[in-house]
Amino acid sequence: MVTAIPFPFARIVTTAVVVAAVVLFGMLVDNAFVITLAGYTFAFSLFALSINVMLGGLGEVPLGQCVFFGIGAYGAAIGMVTLKLPFEVALLLSMAASVVAAALIGMLTLKLTGAYFSIVSWGLSGVAMVAALNLPDLTGGPLGMFGFPPITLLGIPLSEPRAYFFACAGLLAGAVLLMAAVRDSRFGAAIESVRQNPHLARSVGVDVFRERLKAFTLSAPLAALAGALCVPYTQIVTPEVFSVSNTVDALLMVLLGGSRLAVGPIIGALIFSIIPYFFDMDPNVRVLVFSGAIILVMMFAPGGLHQMAQALVRRFSGGAR
Image 1 (cartoon, rainbow, N blue to C red):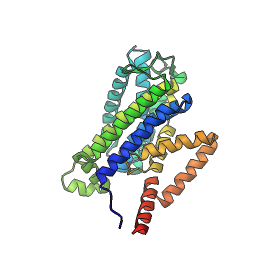
Image 2: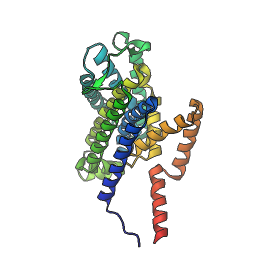
Image 3: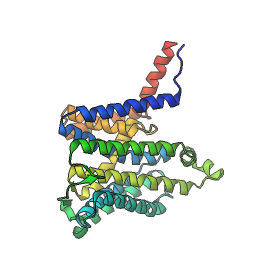
Image 4: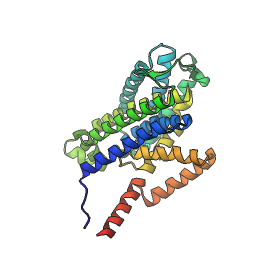
């Protein structure tokens, strides 16, 4: 008979293994490009994580989440170039701006649900891109913003690949722990009840609109943080940061890794980065491969790779008895 491992112990062991693997990777890999790409993958994982707050938490598809990603990127760029602020201050201001923007947008859009919410949020991303294109004095217009001073985070030079990798990994780990705490809180329980059945949640006293607004507002600074952390990698910020294609990429990462798993977006982001790099995929081939993979996952395991892994564990556990 197989003895089940206590869940908290399994979580601790898994966390320790993952942390050790990340540290060893960062210390042992000497390829500067690979290290920097891994750091960028962790940064973009924060964006996928922000989308999962809405998709995994509320069951909504926020196609306009790229608005907050762009606010983070442009906020960091404008803060450093125009206002001559340190990166840390520009980062915090951009995150604060994303919270304000999310509150205002949410007040206007979150009474909509399903496809209506997705379409309206998509439209807002287009408005943001047009604004960035037509405000050259603020955003640099079509050419964007570049020529940043040396970017440091609490004294850590983000131009150094290993430092960038560990900074992004540390912030991502903090975000995952925050999301885990939120999920286990009363707010997390309220969000789950809204996702399962908003009418029933309302009947037992849950303010559905308020909980949806709180979740939306929580997702925004994560997306802004991701946008700002991508700046040291790209070294340029253009209106394309508001493109819905960024949201679609992050959304596919969530679907592939599993929206009901806390680290699902990270798993999906790693797969999206590692496979194209090692197989030297052409961008068109990459789109074809991952589009096909998503179709198969949605057909046979809507919960993502996490659901597949659980099914395999159950099969082998059942066979071992």
